Image (cartoon, rainbow, N blue to C red; front, top):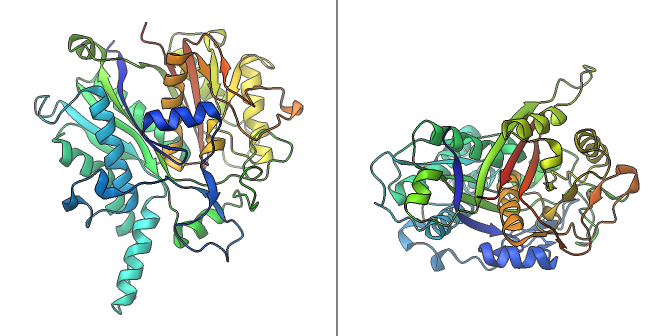
Length: 403
């Protein structure tokens, strides 16, 4: 069976713009969470976010692309450029239809919709279709990357909230198994605008704390919800044989994946996260004891943290695997969160370091080996990334060293 490997990484994250900056900040435990600056949030119950710092579009993109794109698309285009450069791929290097783009999206359309609402209202037109806004955003985030890089192969957008980053990479893996040589995949997302903010607040899962060090505390007794953020990571996924033939640096292999959905609330049936984890490990041809580190979804909501901890302990045993949640330094990035965790997992394997879960004092009731305080040295060969999306999506992905 065709093996899919990661040969390029591109990161735009609240605690670091660019892969090196993000990883350095993550290992040092540096957070990018702070007061919202993109709009006036003083009148809202939640006022903290993870915002990508120092991003000036004109420093990274041609001026012709800026007027017709929104903030999220500019971040995605930049991340794609960096991932392709890291992989050593230039436009025209591959035959027609040999390369594609499959990304994830969730809430970024809100920001585009906010801008269109403001423009239309200022012109006296009170009618706008939210669905048109979303459709445009979802298409442009993938389509602009395809057009900019001449990638005419399989293209698409996966929409499954926080699980989307894993689901997109899994879909890219399927396309490579079908014969596509290379796919840019992952997610860059966020909706730091009034419309998107109100929509996120409707979940009742956002933290209302004004203290960046105490607002987002997954697996802590003081867990009080999550802090939203923007950004994410795009990766270059490639046929392993092709990557080795051209002498590419390989970060790791996408070895296993599975997705499940939770049953209807009140049905009495068990949640699906446990099964997703087991199926992903089996898909990789491994056993639970083969997993060296787990990157958690880390909802930051007491009952959701309990459910995740229960699933982890059921599969690995109490304290059976080191657990990390570096998103405590970025906030939850919606469809960008899981692909950023995949990037962190690959870099952890490369450097033999598990990033810390900052600000958190692990609640003993969860019975997890949660890595807190500082990065933990470890011999790492395989990592499991877990993600859950609002509405019952569960995804799990195994990555391992390139051997």
